[in-house]
Amino acid sequence: MATAPATLQSLPRIVLDARDPSFLRDPYPRLERLRETSPIFYDPELDRVFLTRYDDVSSTLRSRRFGTSILHVLSRDELGWPPPDPRQADFDRFEDNHLLSNEPPKHTRLRGLVGKAFTPRRVEGLRERVTAVVEATLDELGDRDTFDLVHDVAEPLPVILICELLGVDAEHRATLRAWSAAIVKLYELDHTAEQQRLANDAVIAFSAFVREIVARRRVEPRDDLITALVEVEDGGETLTEDELIGTCILLLNAGHEATVNGTSSAILTLMRNRAHWDTLCAAARAGNASLIKTAIEELLRFDTPLPCFERWVLEESAVGGVLLERGTKVALLYASANRDPRKFTAPDAVDLTRDPNPHVTFGLGIHFCLGAPLARLELQIALPAIARRFPELRLADAHAPLDYSGGFVIRGVARLPVRPR
Image 1 (tube, rainbow, N blue to C red):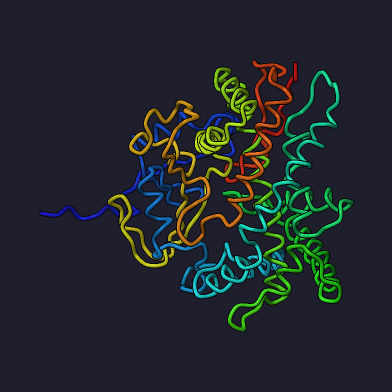
Image 2: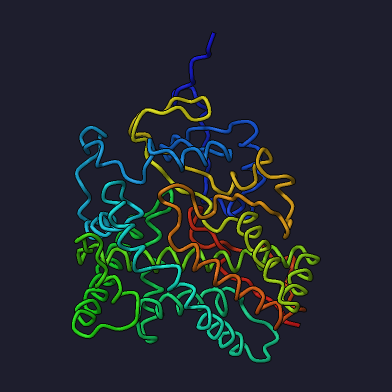
């Protein structure tokens, strides 16, 4: 006789407390315990069901019964929500107009249009420029005895490249970085009223900035991504101005935050595993592109830069033997899935030759990260360049506790002081 699936009411009640500094510094021991004892649990403070195991996370990502938005399926009244908060009206408008927060058919249309402009060929065409930017960034370090790998290397690289990709002048980089940092705070599992205000203000300013550039590109096109987005057409469909603005903001936010954290976390992992750093240095000197590629996939798996993404239950669904009602919010713990021993051999060990490596760092299904090729290109160029320049690189203080910025959805070290020799 078949066993009836469990329901949300029967799940373990566990408060994740994702803002706990000790959890942010090293979430993996607790995630391992949860994965083995409470693989699916409900956090009453966050009102979310959490999934920890690889198969549950990956099946949810691939299923069309789950989505990144819910209001196309249920009304605010049906969900028991209050009216829209006017304090984040501009942020909500931005969310309504980019592909990550939409489901088919709107997502299909947006992804098709953006994909025609943001092509693999355009990304690959950046290889020479990425290399030049990386080398120039490392040149600026000069003969310093110490430097902060986050502030001096990991943060500048992606914002320079995304600004160049979009066609944004260099003088605006710092401003765009600040706007991005404010906006992504609203993607955390919880946020303050002040963070809400700052995020909404940043969307207003960012939108006005992009709108002005779009107006100029309509008159004077350039060879940049904003021009391509202005001109893209597919079967008579084009991007509205709000969709174009939302796409540009999304590209900076997603492309910048993930790559900064991916770069700094990768270096930190290698600094803590000296033999692996030496292996990467040898591969960089030899130009072993194959090993560099597998190493980067492993580093992205081992310490996931975006550890948690969320989905809504669009249709009643069973996951891991638990029946979830429509309208339930589900948090997918990528960081836990990427360490699941049911999928990965010796998951808590770094294996730079691991292949295949089916990590979920960039997601799966229709919302698979559109910027994954650019993130991989940046890491494939930046990490070996750092290894060639600084083979003796060390943490400035191997015993100093590290502070993590942001939260658990976007997790990365705030500072990473290192000694190049």
